[in-house]
Length: 153
Image 1 (spheres, rainbow, N blue to C red):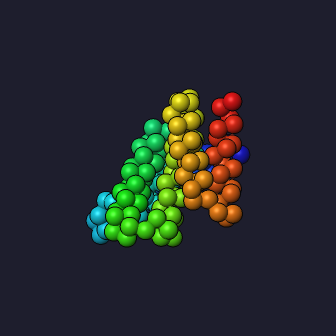
Image 2 (cartoon, one colour; image 1 turned 90 degrees about the vertical axis):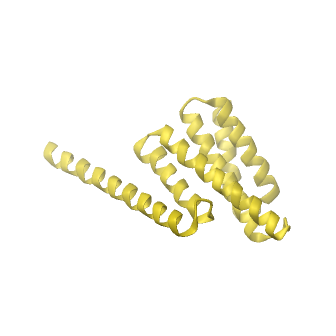
Image 3 (cartoon, one colour; image 1 turned 120 degrees about the vertical axis):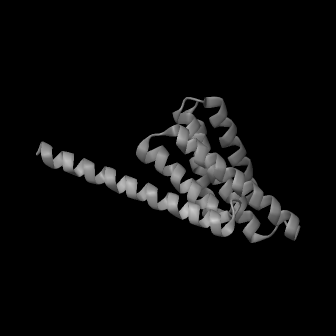
């Protein structure tokens, strides 16, 4: 039974490594094809950040990936505003929503690291963005931010 458990753990570890390797390869390929500030780069960075946060429990690496995703999303948001000069653009709102989701992830990582001031700052910024962009389909996202804030009370 112990040997079986060890084999299961080894398999899970290999699956984690395969997951991470495949996403890092995809990140590299997309960066080469699209540049470092493309919207889809942020998506992969956030996925890798969530992997480090939840699966590996490496909060420093999680934070590093989420912060880079946030930087990319902010560049995307700014370039769309400049290019289209239209705050009502649904794609721009989508990027704003992703910024808020990423800020929530950053808040969660900071909370786990006991960096409560940083966590609260990220949660409040996310909540402010959701107030501007929130529709009924995103109310679960607002709830996630509020849960993060309530954990600190």
